[in-house]
Image (tube, rainbow, N blue to C red):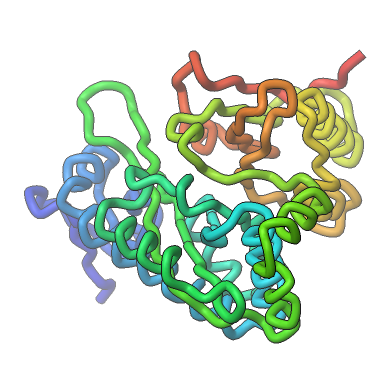
Length: 334
């Protein structure tokens, strides 16, 4: 006898076979809970979110913290970043941002190859509204007390997208689930840490020598300008798949160059992944979010790169038109 699956909404009595549920039921965006309809999923969200978001994403944050300590390549990378950040900006935290739980899971499974683009954030630029009062207090305590010659503060944030219960059109909200920890610097980084903290003059000199790096969410990014670079379905015309990918890649770089951002220099891992996608080494390019700084305005902005976007994924994009610009990168420029 086939297993019976009940709608997760306690106020709904619908049920069906497991085979039928796999075909027609709607799953939670962040876990395996099943609902008989989108309406039930929305209605149950306020109750479900308390366990869903913080249990899965919180667990992933802890796994990321553990993996960062155990993976030698990752530890070496974030240790060097922490050392440079302290030399140029003083106390702060290395922030690892993951645009989805799936992105965090890939890092836990694959290590440094899927780390993304961690950045150094000064302690004074960290946002209490981004992480909640309790975690903010803990992060501030760590930032003010760690020994920069032997330790770094690692702050992990996982973005979770979910439906907002409403009787009208479907709306989406983004939440950050975060954790932090103090971990030991990689051995190679510790050898140089003393020079990083030796004197204000030394720190200023190292800061001048360090290349400009992409920023992270700071006070100016509480509500950031957002640039969405996406290839909309059906706009590739008669181009071959390879040609369509080349056009998208060229347009991504062009849009960022207009803002003084070099994808190759500032976000080398994203650049390499796009190169692999263009040359056919990989079939798909997972959506990625980066936080560059516009060289003209000096302000940071959010950039979402979403290739071969499906209609359902396009619904996840922010819709505040006053702060969001969506560019179709599938159209070849003259």
